Image (tube, rainbow, N blue to C red; front, side, top):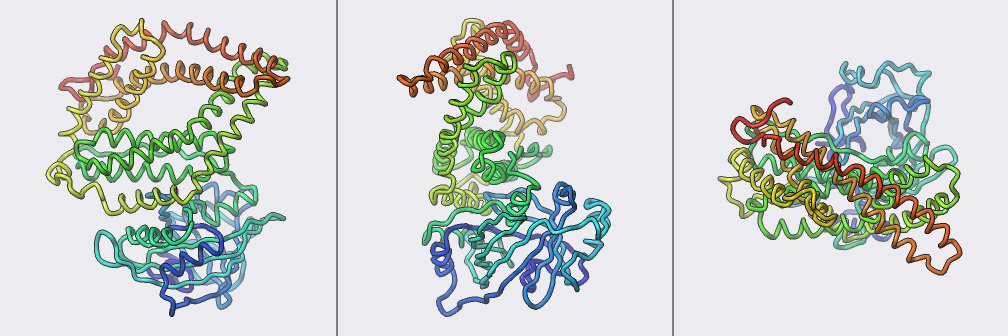
Length: 536
């Protein structure tokens, strides 16, 4: 994919979209310079120029809400208008976006924004009077094109852009200090190969939020919200190899898309969805461990568990504040002891989120780059039995689901007498079965998986509620222990007692229903077995 005048996929007619494939690394000026010199020959300093871009939208940010950004860029020689259809980060922060670019005569946007009727319909009707500047960027950019040996096949050309400057929105400013790696031609794995070379020479970090995203946040048009991945689409007859590619990519996409929401901390869904992606990854590694190499399973499991544990306290306090404590406060809005507990819990939550700053560390970037390269090169194929990989997924699905279903039944024996610890173990086993059941459901279209999956989800949610109460009690005890000897301990103790007592009673009242849901699950016919399942 060639670039003209700094605009990816520029087309004079303004009609054909280009697929932009890029990866961005952030860091301070010294680190970025070291990364640049690790990739660009000393006798090739690159080309430098100043770029001023103005981003336009309606007063209610309609374009942005529909997934588009519109900008006009002045590079000192000409004006180019670009419409981008932004998508979530892919493959560990690899960005893929459609964009439509064309030269314009004035700094104001030229309508229509694209000649493609489908794109215009997606954007919606626009009048010049509706568009106004939302924010601008002022950047000094140094560019160079380098040849990179791709780890999987051949060579690739990558354009580097070293950017320094700032984003301006209203009276607010944010510094720009980043290195963009954009694929000109060749396999996308080359971007990761080059980024890993750079990162080995400097403390660089993955930059998942685009300039446009950061600009709209500054302009007040949006925040950093959690991102829920779409359902995994695995058509009937899909191969094991294609399945692995889709699962690992969607997990990486979901992590990357929630990266900034975790660091921002304003939306609890960011941490939750980040952890969901990691748990799905671990479930896939477990389900396919007979196919994957032991080394791949080991390092991916290690990193996933590290991140799950790192973000665990933040998730625990999010659930406690937003669900456990909120339920009691709504019933007792004037209780000052609950207000004191809420303030203390907020402080604990803030400390837990400080741990998430580890996502900015070089070690985390190294993991993301390694994971991204592994996905782009289909690293799971190395040393694997290609006959199994190229065979249909359905051959593996039935035996694996049988194994996990039997394990759940074994852990759930004498369900009514199970201790909280045994119920916790059962919940984890159910979660693994649920992920596998959802992975493989489309391979058995005649089995009608919905009744089985529905019963499985209901039971898992039931046990999740019991676990939330147990975790809340553990965290509250930690909070009280940390404040022993303080003047607020008495009030905190009273408030904590109310919250824990409230949910202990709620759990006790829920037990009969949970027992019923357990029996409903055990009665549900496993959909992958001959004649399994009915649309009950």
